Image (cartoon, rainbow, N blue to C red):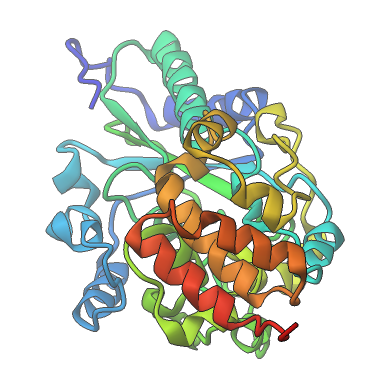
Length: 364
């Protein structure tokens, strides 16, 4: 946390309200679509988190349990935290029909829309630092720390608490006017700013996200078993993808957007204005074979500055091998799989062998 050597002069309630308005204005100027403020009481969300961990629904994501209650108690993570400033930045780069078209063309590789451009962690963190600097220029030194999905922070719960939206049945945050295609970031601060009213739930009786989930990962409204989720299986899981899920993954090679694609609220989603999130290296329209042919250096070059790089080349090949197994049988697909067979790691080879069994070859 950035610690203030000289704490700011105590601000009156009127001055704090005026400062909150200025922060909102500065946030817009920095490219954030929205900003809201909450206190740090997440007792109800902490209960949900602990129950989720006790059920083992986090799978291999050991980091979700590692920090104890620091995730749900901002004051334990950063002593002195009184308020959380939440910000939103939209990331949708194509209209949703393009994403659906890609899903419906099984020879293409489907990549989650958030990973099309530059790694959002870097983009949001730099902007949050600029926002903190603006505040410091206005009130003098103060304590703060910026987060973007980068530490034990219950960002969706904080965003809901501050009125940014509500956590939907798929466990993503939804905004009534903007859907759910956005990133969140936070500034923990010791400034006692006025708080915004919490978001109200507008899911109603809709179960579209539950019904459309390819692997039935949303086991009940507001309950996600990550071990079944394609985003978990293709990004978080390090080893072999369980056989039961491979046919269900389809052509999704990095993440999954189905629960967002088919959420009615996303008809209000706007395309991002942020250049850093625009598509790189034709990641929205490349064929599985093209992507499978990348060697490790090409993978590193083509995912430089991208969130995709974190899974590494081996898991990239593992995921694409599964998708090739799910694609229609074509000589080119069989040839691509066989070409990688001998040079692949043991883990990737196992997925290649599975994929080849999905394409019975006709005898000559």
